[in-house]
Every structure is written in C-alpha cells, then in structure tokens.
Image (cartoon, rainbow over all chains, first blue to last red; front, side, top):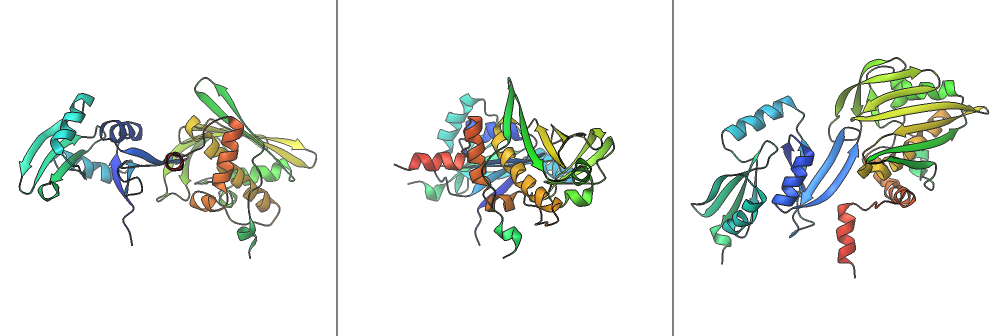
Length: 132
Length: 190
C-alpha cells in the first residue's frame, strides 16, 4: 500500500494550477478531462515521481462548507515541507503571495501560512531536526 | 478470450480540427453500417448510451429541454445539469456537456449512416478527445452490430491504446500530445 496521491479541494482549477505551480513551485503532472470532470495533479520538481497533489474542483456543498469553516478558523488544508521557510517566504513575497502568517518559530519547527487563492490556507514548514 | 479483451483500436482516422482563433472544434466522421433510425436510438436512449458513451443520461435525449449527464469512469460520477438544444430525429442532435457543445449529424449513406460529431472541446484536450471518441465509436459499431463489448472509457480506454491514438491524432492535428509526465521523461533521457 502506498500513498501516491492526495487531494485538496479548490474552487477554481485554473487559478489553483497557477498558484501551485507559479507561486509554490510545483510542476503539473497529470491533466485529463472527461466532459466536466478534470483530473489535475501537481508534483514536486525535487521529487517528480513522489506523491501527487490532486487539485480537485470543489463542487460538493458539504465540502465547501467544511473548506470555508477551516479557512475561517485559520486551519491549513495542506502542509508542505521546505528546506528554509524564510527563504521560501522571501521568494514568494514578490510573487504577490498573501501570507496570513509570516515565518514563525514554534516548538520544533518554523512555519508560515499563505492563502492559496482557491479557498484554502496552506502551511509551509521546516522541522528543526531537518536543519543541519 | 472475450471480444472485449481482443479489442484494439485501429489507426487514427476520420478526425479534423477546425480552428477559429482560440476556439477549436473537433470534427469526427464515422461511417456505420446501420440506418440513421437505429443509430439515433443508440445516441439518445439511456440504456443504449450505457453501452458505449462516456456519460449516462437521466432521460431520453430525443426531446429538447433539461437533462442530467453523469460522467462514467471518474472517481465519483460528476453530474452536470445541462439541456438538449436540438433533437430532430433521426438527423440532428445537439446538447452541451462540461461547458462544450456536442452536435451529432446523421446522414443516410447507402443502407448505413455517415455519423458526424462536432465537439468544441478545449484545445488542450483536443487530441485526447479524438482518441476517446474513436474508442467509443468502435464500441458503438460493435454494439449496433449485435456484438456489444461494453463501454470502454476513462481508465479502461488507457489500457487499450488510447495513448497511441492520442499521439497519432496530435500528430495529425499538428499539436503536442505529450503529457507533463512524458515531457519530463523525455528531458531525462539522453
């Protein structure tokens, strides 16, 4: 059993692709359509055959309510590991990324949070134990 | 081995893309050895659509008005509420699906039918759409001949040569068929 793909609900797949590639820096991996359905995934350029993130169109009212509540509570819908949160913050800031939390030292890690423009907050994190 | 397992699509043929600026229309022509009245039923009756089409319909498509179409073979059925715009049996059928227009024209051809499909699919997916419809038409042809093999869409189509057809149609249309995965693999190779 393997975790090969995980999903995040987005309210606009086109905007999502732009944010997850142009801002976060992932690369598009799969993009197929069948009528109104679009299977769209991205992967990390550092790990192209690693876990894919599906950008799933949120057309489910229950999921929309959940997504909205999590956003209002400031809870991230996904978490991505980076080598250096501050460096990523500096890189993304000029790309008009909207950070709701600047790089912040917390127990065991440094985190930052940003708006993915498609209904979610996403967190980037560097674990202390990862740093040399 | 069942006839479904033996099925392999032939070479890409019968498709063209009409380009009007950014709006592209995929036009597919298939000659069938069955009269328009019989083909019309296969295009409109929900039970017959289930034999070959990439979607299910909640009613007969032979009258204009609202209809729900559901995707088949996707992780969960994606139901879209749309409408039949024209239904002129047994020669013209038009509805939209996924924001794109689908128009079928049936012309008598001897004892059979020349079936033409216009689909203004997003240009990024035009060769994928041609490959998918090609397989659907093959399955339709067998169903009409009384030898149904069961519809082959989505993941099932991937297993029977959809990628090859996609590449062949892309070549005919003069576009790049490669998915991001293939582009990356190509960069990796020497």
